[in-house]
Image (cartoon, rainbow, N blue to C red; front, side):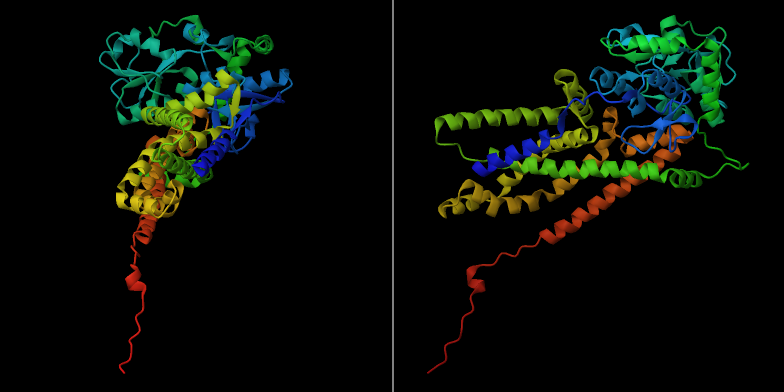
Length: 523
């Protein structure tokens, strides 16, 4: 029991060592954006055209938002550092102190103003519709032309409110980001999506299958929706400096900067008159972006391997503890029962909630509630570890109960303690028996790391999505990503099958079989 408690304590200390107090004031201005919404912001592999580093990666961000953020950073005598975050994670990242401000084409809607403060506008947006160039609505000129059309917009963006103005259209469920909407449009799942002029111009220039429509009559837009502003925490007094920087730019200068960024965004060019085959496009994507995809794959493997190992250790420790006999001392027995209840709460909570929710709560919630600043990679490992531990604890418990009861009785008869029984007799059999389930958890973890992009972890899916937004070849890019995931999971499965075969060999012998009886010669 003492060894078990000591092991649990050491494990908890090692896990909580991931947590560090919020970083001291430094010379960086951390700005959050998707880095996947050209021409406002995008990801590239070098620092050309004034691109700036993306935190935690070897890549750079550029675009209209980045250039505005650079001006703000210069006036604050700070060095700009972009924190690449999914759209849904931007406001939690800001309110929890993970970033200093949001410069991501965000409009100061009334709903957002309840959570954060906004600067003066640094660009005025114009809503348009993007349709398939060869579709039924390519010739539409007004809102009335979209009767029965399947139209959508980005979730959490003011564009969603414009859907109601398409009174006779078939409004679709809002989608997570522009990448999803472009895929849906190419696949024919939707007929159009609401966008902004710069993004629509980019889509049209990058892929001839997209067409931008400026309608007359068009959408009625509130001034607070059309404006794009810098998001900041409500108690951040630096908003005065931000407004001073923005006020230095005239409307003509804003338009000129946007036009310049449109010409500098990285678009895939195809000089051949013939359209390459699907496999050729996949090969090109892999050839040009293999380093970015390799980094994402490495991050996915790191998180899933370490998370699975730590989670399995947690599961083994909990399994051993929950099968331990009650202490004879009444006080210790009460503490044992209380700790058992806490373990039950932990298991039920982490088995009953999605990992994406756990990631948001642990990474952003702890920072906002307690001022703790956890490194995103260590936070990801921590999240996967405790999530895996909750599942593995039940798997281990079942493996322990699967061991014949007579072995426990025999160990007790020989004077073994509970720890000795577990360590020398039970756990070796349990580990062998739960190996298939452990392998299954490993495979699940490889795939589930894709949800960690909400806390800015640039894993395989996030890297692939970035490539897709740059190339506008969504099906080809995600086919490459699917193959990489399959190779990872297939390889892991085969390795574990090999280990199972090596371990699944009974070498038990009886004492009689080990005795050599010498023949006694006849006298």
